[in-house]
Length: 371
Picture 1: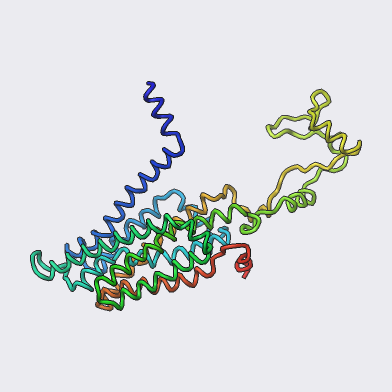
Picture 2: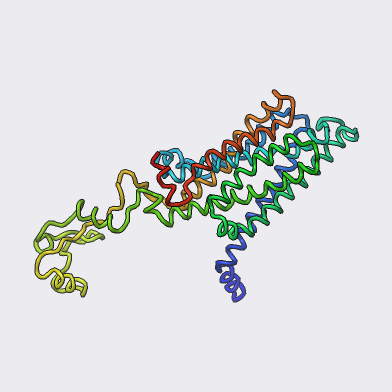
């Protein structure tokens, strides 16, 4: 019993809980990496057409969107999402679409495009052997991408302090289409592998900076989230909207919050605060606000907090896999070239650059939301 109690106390420690959450995330990332690396080649080797192979990859994200409990609320909350969050969501969605198009189909691109292998060839043939070698080299590129992402994650705080969130975020988004275009044009395995590894910079930034910005928005709600008002505005709204009339305190009894009827301050139990307020009023009745109203009641989403906005940003990751998985197979079949994978990733990256410039990074950008 003592050991069990000691273990329970240890697990309730914040660092222990953080370690458990990171361990769970680590396991999920391993599964995701294995799926991204080996599922597309296995499907192609099994004889599945390119178009249907990409659609199979979209089943997981679609199921995630269906079964996540928060998602059904998104439809009703869509029109009430603050503009700063909406801009950040769109930019992150486009950036993730570019990155996921690259990650989902990179091994197939290397196996067919660089090594000129054929996934449907019989085992033991040169075409099949070249394709398998390409898949292994592609998995090495994705591994190096993860290593690069870890490196930039460790120095991200230093980068933000040195160059600012705007510069780091825009640089990471702008760097990806450049790397994707290099992979499109180069036939060198070494150059393509290095370009794939450097996309870890974008991968790291997308997992850190959007959530940093969301935290900034909620830390300074009066500046970035217009439904919140400053303390002075709250006091003015209280006096203008709901104020006790003169003499109401002495003549009318109101229910307490728990429904108990009675005077606000009874003569038998007057707290010190009541006596102090009576002295400050100088014998004249004081104006007392009935309730605190923050912002326009019609525009405030009840129960809204930072967790909801973080969940909205997380949904961009799932949504980013749906569109590429549905359309990329048809695009490759139409162009008859797996280079279309990297070209599409670069195109999504260019769109992401445009929307990234619309993101609100500081107080000077707040005017963008009114446009």
